[in-house]
Length: 288
Image (cartoon, rainbow, N blue to C red; front, side, top):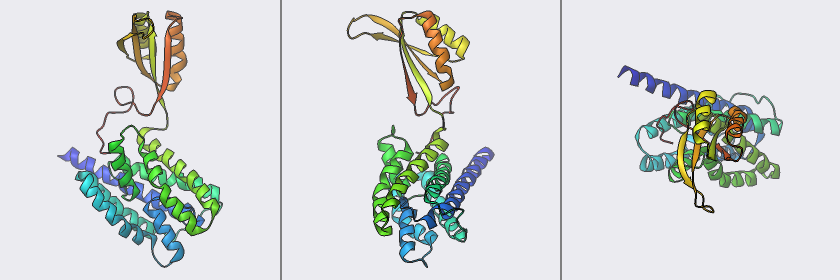
């Protein structure tokens, strides 16, 4: 019971921090640069552009209501409790930090640093199974249908319509170009917080020396492997295929191991978006 309370408290503390980081980054870099960002914050920014007296934080909360309802209907559970909490904290943070003066008005710097800061903020919220509602809810609902697609990329896609609308409102052709860069940087930062900034590798090795290669993989790389019986479509001959998850800096050593044991081995090395389990990231259940 005590450990569950600590975990819950930690979750909400991380979500709170993520919302504050998002709000500070938004007000320092995005608000005064008039970049056509996506999401509810982007819509609020456009409305604030025409009606400066309307608070972006308040508008964000009001516009989020339909998406919160969608989330309650499609997702529910503790995720939505955290999302409702995050929505209120984000709105309050946006309002509380509106007084911040922009660090720079250079569009490209605002785009890069704004995307990095807001992306990290969103990533922290997502990391603890929450969201800031808006297009995040849409992205999470879509990811449940398409789990192989990174969450940041799904949110990037759902924001494009809002970006087009905002760029027209600002009457600035450059705005949409900066927005594309901003959302790309934000999506990378979000996925980096969620999945890590490094890309691990998955190697497939078809060989007649599977025993020798696997022994060296275990002893020299400290990795395990899975051996699968494979049949060649052209030769109809059965051979062993080794499947092994490795880190990028182990590729060179793996090549040497395979070459030393079987010069005729067929090896494929691919990028993996996420590896969960021993030696990599812990396999923790997530709502997103």
